[in-house]
Length: 582
Image (cartoon, rainbow, N blue to C red):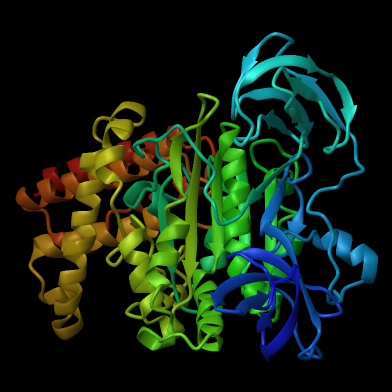
């Protein structure tokens, strides 16, 4: 019987999927393939055949070349230095690789995810004699404007601090020793396919405030929640995700460019460092980790990139931070799985996607959540995944399987973007399943009337959709007077509340108080309009009210309350005059 070795031999090559024989390996072991030592991962073992997905271009390698098993699973380095970094799908720092070889990355080149030479100022928060356990915060490092909390790795058991140091250290130097003999450094390594442990998952009852009126007002997402943004090309997925990254009240942003076009990813890489963080006035990159994996990069690395991103997000969550993760887009990730599955000659599912597509999507989105961490703190990972259905067809498998998992659906509409209505989120197709759990928060923090007002606005918009079918057939003049007013109120909701200018310094972010004030002002006009109609005022006079034409300007005024009060007083005065004239 042939004895398997740590080194095997290449037997078969099919693009990024290669087969090795005579190799002692376990599932998900990382291996070095060929003379150039290309990085790969074991994804299937059949008898003596070990099937490997290679994270780099395999052109030029041939059967007979060696394959070496590292014995480790695909892991990421976690520690000071993550923030401001730009990685590829397997956590190779692109800035470091550019310095080494220019703009074109050669094959077989590796670099550690974090700098092992840079020294960080470590300040302990525990002392000798303290009892600590997995997840306990033992010290702090000030990284950019974020305090990086150094934690006891989950794999290290409980113990008493025997020795702890203060000063400047590299991530490999020992900073703490326990009475058990365990040594702790600032570096943690974690396998990307394994979720990091938590004490418990909590109910998603706190909203992620995004500053986008259509999202906060009609379709809110909770911290630790999941959302999908599906939409065709040019409908604004990337702009929406960038607005969420910039304005949402998450403290850390992890942005995964998964298989996007090179020019789109270039925009992200050039714009993000230039974006100003509205909370601090400093660059947004100081609290961001970017993972860039463009469509021309090897598909296997694209498949790994989402796991790399979610593991980094979980690490910051364990420190007690609220993290938002943007995956742009999960469709390209699914396409990578489809390509690898076909090369493995697996039985295809719907539209050629692997039969386990739904399971993989669930596995990814289920790692979101608001949790009670191991160190008795609270943290969250909110996952917002863009979906790029071919031709904008929401019935395709990736969109449909995503909808079964996520609780928030923000449907982008190409027709709205063509009409210059931004954000181009269709309010009739979108939904949020967090409304019930978030209701008490809005009652307490915004207004007891918030939920009723939101229900009223949705009712008006749905009624308008029904009436528009009649309008297109016979014209708006054929509608009863009351329904003509409904059409006008719906137009105000669309143009004043739902439309938002991402490039206006004031309108780009709208806090909850202002959102409530705008919606309440439209409701006040609506109530007065129906009352005037019952009093006998003609519908054209109600719709032609001059004072209400000033309402749209409220969006662009920072100190809006005095102006809004003036407009509402003028609207009331005009209605009084109209009723007196009847």
